[in-house]
Length: 250
Figure: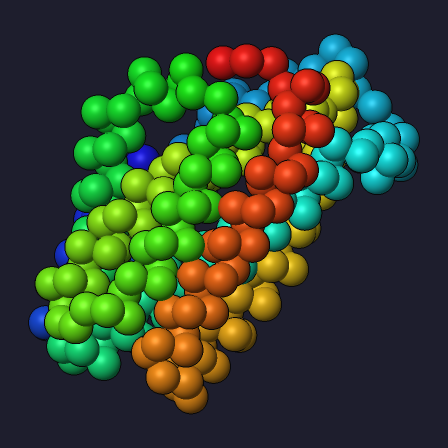
């Protein structure tokens, strides 16, 4: 559903802006109102788990879990790279082919992500998440660095397609490992701690990514992103084997 929205949203917003950009905001507001009413009438999520733990106890469990901290260290480079989809990618595409090229980035991301998820869903379920994380980082290091060797919007959109495959492998892998490490009754806290790390890494990625696009050369920008991917690969190769003993094989 995320990828479907990513593909449809820019297309609908672009068409609405041809008439008046306010139509896109009005339509979004109406949609959120309908969704709010639907959720209000829904009973989904009203059943509480039998083994709920106090917040402070859950935080203590998460804070003292060494395997979770190893996973957080490994995931930090990805949380730095992930926001580039919303910062560096549209800025760079706009520099190549004008402001409307940013929409093409999101359309490619949504369509390729949906197609890959549907075609590879059985493989994604079976693959070991620690292994997929390590190789996804390696692919990210190569992909980000290679952008500097090509020019033109078509080549960049091909990179976005490759990035989307990496993203579609990486995000479920990190969430699977988090869920596998979480103790009963503290699952939400474990995911919350990981999300807090994601917010910190994302804030860094947003700032650094936009600064590089506006102030650095293409080679410097891509080398920086590629280096972060390489750091993630090394970290995953060194750290995740120590964590994988707690992760059930898929």
